[in-house]
Length: 232
Image (tube, rainbow, N blue to C red; front, side, top):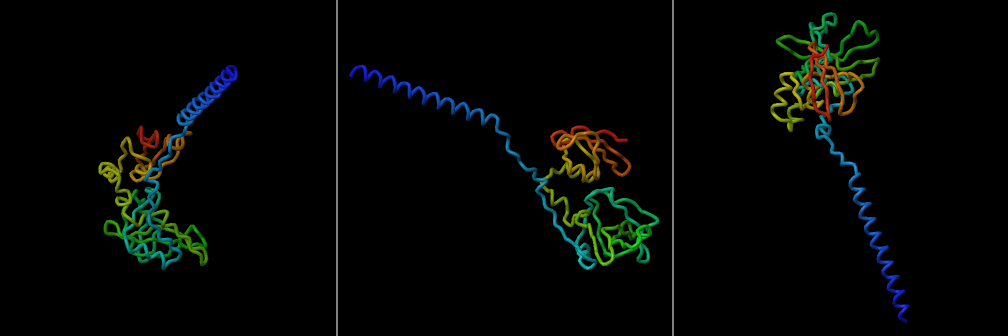
């Protein structure tokens, strides 16, 4: 009987030791999993902003652009022309629309661009400095309209869409200036669209901004402006 009790005690101690070892192993594995777990990805609120779209599909629906102001999405990429006697003077470009420039569209019309045979341009007519101009927002091929105003224009004030940005950021944007710490959307609003320079991508990269003839080279680290240089 004494030997049996001793054997049972040894078995109990052995089982208890195994259980303790398993508990310690599980704790260690949990600690390793927690330490190696990737940090949760937090979406940048700026990329969650959803601007209003009008989805124009013909000349009549495009007249919706006249019912509120519009703001240029991609600065220095849209050429505007003098609009005289209900015709756009394509032979004499008047300039480029600025980043986040506000335009009051008076009407949407069609016009023939001399170098595009068989196509008509869909033109947004607006006034600037006491004169009337027009810029293309699409084309007409036969009876089919292709209108790109949703990609070209905001129909809501960007100051309201991105009102979470600090006042000093908006002051820099309105002056077409770039400061360290700004993100790529803010820089696009200040300088227009940039083009890749080098092999960087994602949150770490360098972009060249033509900036209407006053180029800048901007380097981003973790999605924020780290370095600003005059471009070539």
